[in-house]
Structures are given as structure tokens and as C-alpha cells.
Image 1 (cartoon, rainbow, N blue to C red):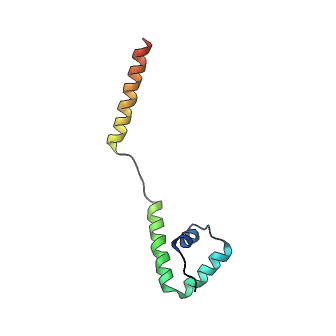
Image 2 (cartoon, rainbow, N blue to C red):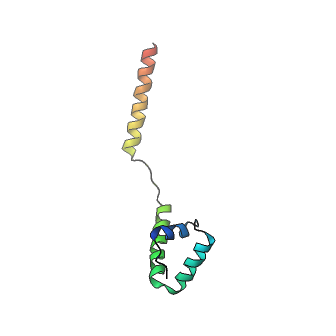
Image 3 (spheres, helix red, strand yellow):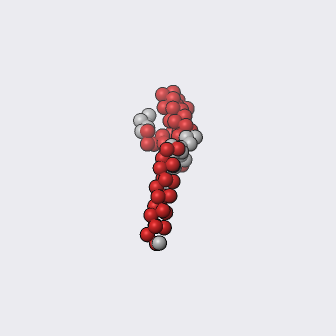
Length: 80
């Protein structure tokens, strides 16, 4: 019985493990309940991470726009 690391499980989930490693893990999953549970938890976390939508706060966007507007005004004033 191999003691699989979280890194090995992640490689398997993202389909980045070798064919031999994947086959060995799949065989172990058939009889190892704890490993199946660990893999299920990691798969759920992976799916949640893939579905996270991140966007900046409105305040941050307004600050950037205000800065750009001020920079444009300063540039225009220096050209006159």
C-alpha cells in the first residue's frame, strides 16, 4: 500500500500524472476508503476553485479611473 501525498493526488486530478501512476492510484482507490475520501475532498475543492469569479471592488476601479483622468489632465496642462 502506497501512502499518496496531496501532490500526487493533485497531479492525478489535473491529469498530469503518468499513465503508470494513474493506474496504480486507481487500483488503490478500489480498496482504500480513506484515499477515496481524501480524493473526493480535493476534487470538491478543485471544482470550487475553478468556479470562483474574482472582480475588483468598485472603489478600486473608481480610484484607477480617477487617477487616469488626473494624469490626462496634467499631461494636457503641460502641453499647453
